[in-house]
Amino acid sequence: MSLQMSLVFGTMIFQMITLLLFVLPLPLMVRSQIVTLYTKITTAQNFRIFLMFSITLMSLQFYDCIQRLEKYRRVQENDVLQGFVNYDKLASKFYSQRNLYLSGAILYLLMGIYTVASIVKKLVLKEKLYRELIAERDDGSKTGKSDDSEEIVKVKHLIELKQKDINALKKQLNGLQTAYDGLNKGEERSKGD
Image (cartoon, rainbow, N blue to C red; front, side, top):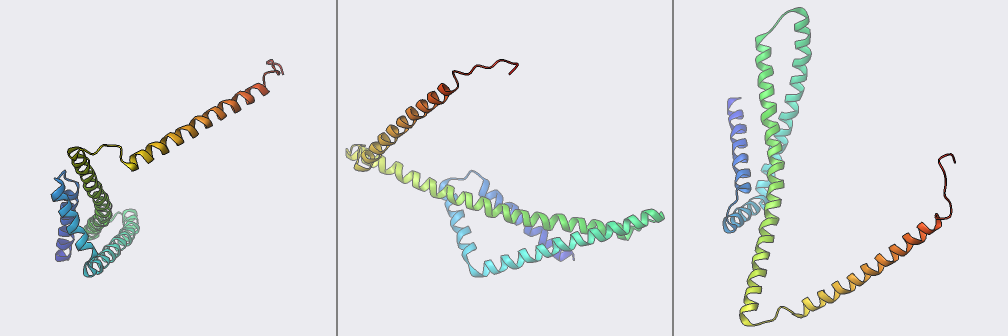
């Protein structure tokens, strides 16, 4: 049993280190290499099988711990009513609680690693795209190209059209509000009505 718990504890430490690597503010090159390595590892078929096997085992251990704790709770209530305390049962209850916390932490860290890795993956892609756009803009200004390319002109024209639509809708809204307010002008009511 101690070998199993040592492996579980080692797995949890490995997960915490992995999560720390994803969260640390590292340079883009290091972060992109971490994301690339993570992607290569997670796309491997053998790793997926190992991961599903591990998740299944941890889930079963988690469920088993919950069942044992429920059994110890029922037994402890009977022992307390009789005035008897069994220290072996208390030790077993402690081990079940420990296993519950460890297996729950591992399952939670798996979800956390997946979530943080997907966020960091998107962050790296956006950062690379941003740097490419900055490099293109800088190259364009060095070669003497103007900032008004065809796409920019089209987008500016589209923005102007949308702004005209917005202004027309605002005028229509103001007209409808005025007409609605005009419907209730003639009727004044007192408190007694």
